[in-house]
Length: 157
Image 1 (tube, one colour):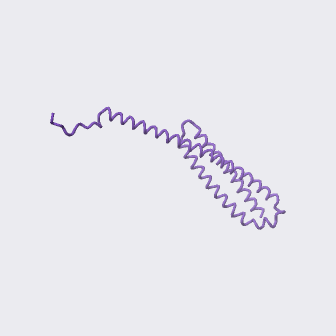
Image 2: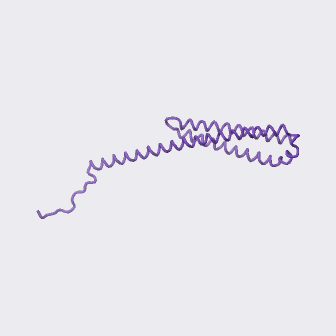
Image 3: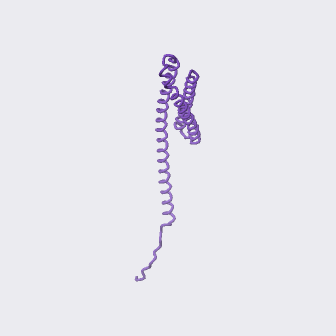
């Protein structure tokens, strides 16, 4: 039983480490979009790495849940005996919950930054299209490419 509790605690420690890494990737993403010129390759690389970390987090969660489900009944019946271990696990879970909330706030800020970036890029693209169309229309008018000579001639003069 103590070994299994130690495994639960170790799983939670690993989860804290993964959450810390995710927080670092969120900070990097925020920095990427705060810069004057956004490096999309850096952003893509950080998204891929963060995806790998999220998969690891999911794996850790499912392992924790499976093991906890096996131990839950024994822990309820022997609460006094394992009070120290239970308290340590509860503290780790509180830390994880706080970290998760911080990550959610970071994600929300990053989403806003990304939306602003793409909105700005769409506006710039729209302006470039307008400028290109205006230049092309000017070119056509100056070269008389739209000019069509009379097709019929009135011979009654």
